[in-house]
Length: 623
Figure 1 (tube, rainbow, N blue to C red):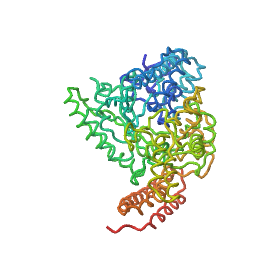
Figure 2 (figure 1 turned 135 degrees about the horizontal axis):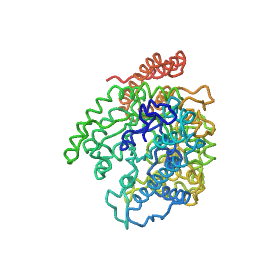
Figure 3 (figure 1 turned 90 degrees about the horizontal axis):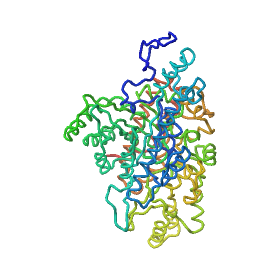
Figure 4 (figure 1 turned 180 degrees about the vertical axis):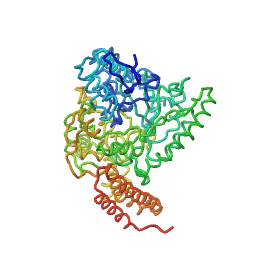
């Protein structure tokens, strides 16, 4: 029985609303009972988050970088759930894709079995079902209806309603498109489809999941073309896609370009996920001064234009492939993430910018119920303040990386340097993309690369100080592809002898304001405004924090480069112009919405004026 409007229950109570029921079961992967999602964090911190969150209706994102970690986690969770486990050796053909498929299918099965168990064993004392509905937004009709029925409906009607309205969160996956190193066998380079990102895509495409693939770190045209080989990304006869595509972007133009590129292949981008360039965790892809507020405003104003433009291209491509184009555009969601920390910010982003979801990443590093993190690393994060969180150059990818002072992987790195053994042994090689010395690509954090690079520096440079500066720059790189996965092993009591004890961590600047371990229910309550987990009174708003980060980035990273290249001044002027426009935008926004954001207007306007004065001191290049 489906609870439909006006249907009378056996106790005489008439339900007037379908509390979360989906009328079309094929559209289940459009449904999300929560207004937040947990983004991918590092390589291992959210590696098994779906097993902790999906049965509570919460969507999370899993990194597909490390198939070795996935194989260990699959063995651990299979044994825990009494699933059959058969290891996949690195010596079998296509082992990387096969491991990924097996890992994702294991999680899919575990979540489905958990949902079946929650429904079949439901009683009025079912703590997990209570928790499921208690954690929903306070204004959620599903939440209100559940507790009303629990008090007023017969048990049979209540259970039937629960069976119809208990929906899992999605098991979404992330691929960093540029992390696509070639692989070799017997000294010969394998075909492109065995590159790391291609194999990860194939592993996901062959899985049973009905969820979304989050593509990040920019465009990879070859990978986009490879997606055409997999039917799950195309709409079926009813217009539904089993596997959807989410593109992580930092500005509207990027969405237009990447969305059109995929539409030309008959693949619909179901969501654009706007992430702050600097106010986020992990790798920081700074924009040319395009801040998240003005960017979201542009998406809000041009959303319909984006949909209609891409839909025509999408239909033309489908028809060229002999496939049926849906009668109307598939749904296109807009979400945002990066630095959000209060219920006021969460609600404002959803309502003012008309977002479908808001990502909460860094705060969940204090929630071991949601992520896999060892207690020592979590305690270190809890003590972190602004000065402990910094934008580093440790990533072998050459992209600025949000780092935490005192993490044990960097301590391990410094110990190796003092022992005259700089670099790591590179046991996983996922970041081996540097071909500077010819032969197979290597990782710039590897001992092999750093030894050669140091010899070059000693041969080419003359001054002692100059040589030491170059050696410091070379040895700053850290083995994050191992370090970002080790915490998950340690947290679950899995051997990390092969990986070593060093742990990397990648929190965003928002970490400074979350200093206590929290339960999942407490964090959900914080997000939805039922409680407050931030004890500090000096946390800046999400928009002001990002603005501050970008201004600091300009003076610390961009302006010093002007001494080497006069042309950089022109680019920097464009950056400052974008910042100036953002300040004017925020001045107007805060003046109109100070109450919604829970801020004191004079304080905010004073900070904006201080930022403006700082950048106005920079001389402008005469064109």
